[in-house]
Every structure is written in C-alpha cells, then in structure tokens.
Image (cartoon, rainbow, N blue to C red; front, side, top):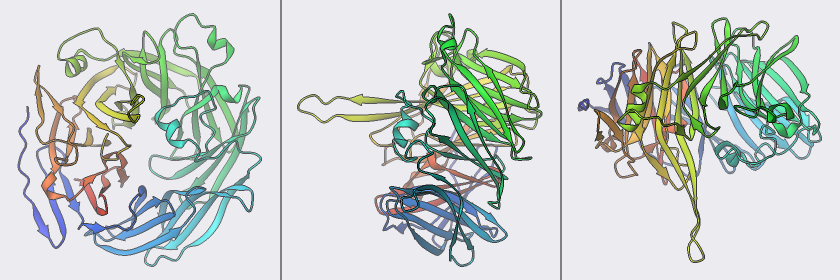
Length: 516
C-alpha cells in the first residue's frame, strides 16, 4: 500500500491553500471560508469561470436560483437571488462570452401554455439580467412534465413508460455547442425535436424527426455533439417485435441517429448473442464509438466491455469488439481469479486520449428498499460501491481494466457519496470521500471504507497510462468544516479545474481544485 504524505498547508486570510504532491499530478487546492447559508436545501446548478481567475456559481433551491460570484481567492464579491417557481422551472446551465453571463432556464409557462427555454443575460461585473425566449413548444405537443418523476427515472430506470419523454439539454465536450432535445407527443411513432445553439446562444439549426417505433418502446441512451460543427449523434434503444424474437442475446436493438442542418441519417444494430443493456456514444477521430459493458448471461450482469466503431459519414459499422475484464481486474475486485460476472454497473464517464484510446469509467450503484413491517418505517438504502475503469485501443482491444474497492451507503441521495472524475496528460483521476484509515486487503489490494460525516477526507485516486494507480488525501477532514459533494463536481478549463460545494446544515464552503 502506498504511504500517505502529510500535506504542507498555507493559510492566507480565510482561504486554505495547499498542493497535493504524492500522486503524479500536482493539484492546487483552495478552500473558501465557511459561510452561513440561508438557503438550506440547494443543488449545484452551474459553475463558470469569470475570466479573471474567479468563478460564478449557481444553486437551485425551492424558490429560485441563488447566484454567487467568487474572486480568485474564493472571496464572495457579489450575490444575486433569481426568483423562480421551481415546481415549474429550473436553471439548466450557464455560459460566458465577451464578459457576459448567460443562464439557460427551463420554464413551464402556464399563462402562455408553452414549454419555454429562456436565456437570462447580464454583465459579469454587475448582475442585472435581461431575459428572452430561445424557443418554445406548445403544451399540446410535448408529452409530459419535464420535472415529473425525474429522480425515479434517473436512479431506478423502471417502468414501461417512454423514459425519454422529459426534454433534456446536452453540451459538446469543449462547450462550443448546446443541443436541446424534446420528445413530441405521438403514441404511434417515436418523434423528437432537436434545437442546436452555439455558445453565444444563437440558434444554428433545428430538426424534427420520427422513427417507426411505438413511443413507449424507445429510450434515449445518450446524446453527443460535435465541437466542429454542432452535428448531433443521438443513440436510442428500441424493443420492436423483431428484437423480441431473437434466440440469443438482448431482446432489443440500438439506433444511432446523425442529425445536422441538412437532415438525418440512422443506423440500427444489436449486440449479437451478447447482452449489452446500455451503451453510450463518444466522438473520436474520424469515427463514432458506441461503447458500454456486456454480459454472456443476462442484462443485469457484466463480463467486460463492448466497443462499436462507426463511420461518421455513412454510419456504417467499421468494427465491433467484445473484451472480457482482465485477470488483474478480477483480482482487484475479488482477491483471486474467478469466473464471475459483475452486477449493477452504472456508466459515468468517457475520455479520449492523445493516442485515440478510449477510457471508460463506471460505478457499482444500486438501491435497496427495506420494508419495516407493520411496526416499523420503510426506507431506501442507496449504495455507491466499487469504481470500474477500462482503457481500450482505437480498435477496441482492451489495454487494461481496474477495479477500485470502496463502499458507501446513504439513506438520501447524498452528493458527498459516489465520485467525480477527469482526465489529464494520460492520467485518469477520481475524487472520492472516504475514511483516512484506508483498508488493507489481500493480494496487495486496498479499499476505501465509508467515512460518514465524522471522518470525511477527500481523496484523489490516479490511474496512469499503464493502469497502475496511486492515491492521496487532498483535503484532510481537519481542514474543512463540511464534506464536499464529490458527485456534483463542475469541471472548467477542459476538466483541469474542478469546483465542489460542501454543506453541513447551514454551513457552506467552496473548494476549487486546479490540476497543474
């Protein structure tokens, strides 16, 4: 097990600063002073750079959005409270351009009987917002409330209803383009409208399309956007009658749509005799990758990684590859080599490196319903368990796969559980909270035990290009008054700067991590 080095801490005013040096990637850490927050229940909505080393942070709460501007030293210099009815609206994201701050709001406008996407624009130096509608959809055309059942769909993925009905927004990797996609009411066909804007929130094109699939049998898997020209790649999963008649493998097809200003193309494919319950799209160099985890047995098990390489011009499949997890991965997880498939993997992140290798990361996540019986209260346990990371070469061959042992449970959806990750200079970094007593396990393995609130340290775990990993505490528990919400990290400057918000009742702190 690697040793943990004591960090040298410099305190300047009310901001704590230090540099993580045990892992190969130096990380400068700044932690703000502790604030008393009048908004008890908030969720981080956005974070953007102000161009001067500071950040602007927005937090949704039940009556609106609370916007805060921090300077380079994380000192609060301005705040603004935007009044909203969060039963019918929310701030989705924010963008900056030419010293302007632009917010995007989803709004169910009952007076106009429209679903509206609204831009709020202001100078960054002094908040005074002006609003305009980017586009709108009549209530009669969209299928159902965007906010309805949002948690149950994102966490449980259950039910027979069309699970892509709530409109969504995606941003290209370098934030050059934004795509809004909305399911249109049509029980006979799968119908969508796509609206694409540049990062100045000027509309580039819109396109509506239908597929001859009953609406309730189609689920959007992922939407990716080209940073070059705003082309949208939308991956859906369908369950038509032909798929149900397959003798082997998953009883479904995947359909990839390419959408641009001139129209659309589509490709339908399946996972052959394998089970691949979920895939994601990644835009590579001269190809579109559809990748995920697969099983030989059933949709709820995972044996390895599947990789489809698709020509972006004609959407023809160039290659497909199924790679079992490596022996090292199985030893990481179980301490010995054994023929056992995994369960409950949720895909989280993807990265393309300088050599066009694909890095995928996921997490074992599941929910248990506990019935208290006649005399007790029923409750839900949320489990955020091991982290899974894999690296594939441009042809889809497995280079390495690793399992990071951790265990976290919560009775609520606690943002301090789970993780965030980023990629820099050939290294994959994960940020998690955990107990400082890292557990020694057999076969030179380690495990990060649940920390609870009394021993909550932020770790950085780094996996290098060869699959070897190291770790270190970057925010010791004694140097912060709160636990930071590592699952809600907001990434700036191409992932080289990360903002975390920490809360404990009314106490609040901001952490800014900068990768050097």
